[in-house]
Amino acid sequence: MSTFCDRILKSGGEKLSETEVEQSLDRIVQLFSFLTDKDMFAEIYRNQLAKRLLNQRSASDDAEKAMIAKLKVQCGTQFTSKMEGMLNDLAVGSEQKSEFDARMEQQTETKLSFGVQVLTVGHWPSYKAPEVALPPQMQKCMEVFKEWHDAKHQKRRLTWVHSLGNATVRATFGKKSYDLQVTTLQAIVLNSFNDGKTYGFNELKELLNLEDITLKPLLHSLSCGKHKIITKSPASNKINSTDSFCGNPKFSSNMRKIRIPVANVDSSHNKSRVEEDRSVAIEAAIVRIMKARKTLSHQQLVAEVLSQLSFFKPQPRVIKKRIEALIDREYLERSAENSQQYNYLA
Image (cartoon, rainbow, N blue to C red; front, top):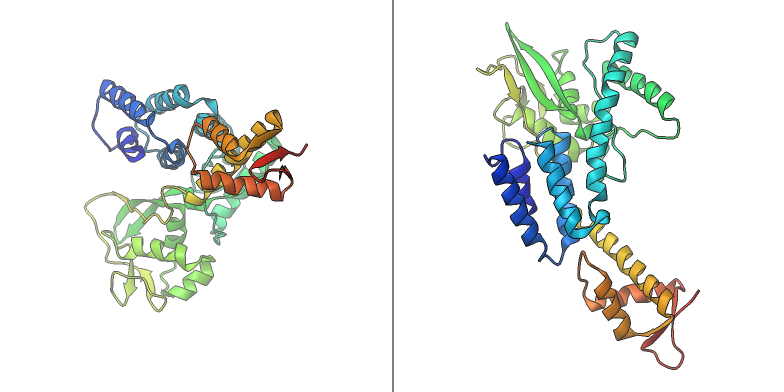
């Protein structure tokens, strides 16, 4: 269901008119009301929404807001607060961009066009943040932004997530120039080959300070895909630690703008995160109920917990496990007279 939403709301997805989009979203929300695992839908939807927003692939801001509003009516503010926070981050970011652009022009003598999107950690999915070795020009731009940002927001701490960035790289092969639309990490890899050197896989890994799991998909996209910007030896469709790489002087294409996709190693949702959130929600419901009722039998407590949880319906054994965890942490105790009865400990 969430993937169907993604196809409707993503640019380049389903070709629908505004009325058809609205009707499709209404039908999805009607179907959504029958789901028992609404929290799992929310996790997947939030990940796909984040990709649409950060990759600028959202077909319409109004349609995104309309879908979130429909989910809010169905499930309440708590369900959609993070999604609304994501849209708000982008709105605030666009206001700050022009102010920072003016600062960049004053302070740096660089040919780079540099922009930063500041995200609030609590609103967005968690992402890997590799500590990549950056080219000096990029490092300088980041330092200027950090100085500007710290002066405006003294209590905020910046963490750079280069795996989400994108770049346009001007590449010249012979007499022809191309604009390569790549991720920030792909751009950093390409920059390594500016001097015409040949690097072994392990040399690149050490030079860029990247792990195998991050570097292999980057090199695969640049040397094994449709557009072979760099050549690898020996030629094959798999990246091995014994391979060597260099720029491809014979590269040629009929297109001037070339988008080079890279395989995504992140899953559509984090199941362990959903399970963790569910455990917290179950425990909060148990404590809330027991604080009001003081004493309850096991069956009564399980029934009341199930009636309070609207986004998912856990198995009774899962609730029992959370009750035992709260007993261990001395929120509850078993009754001395009846082992099937619990008392609340203030």
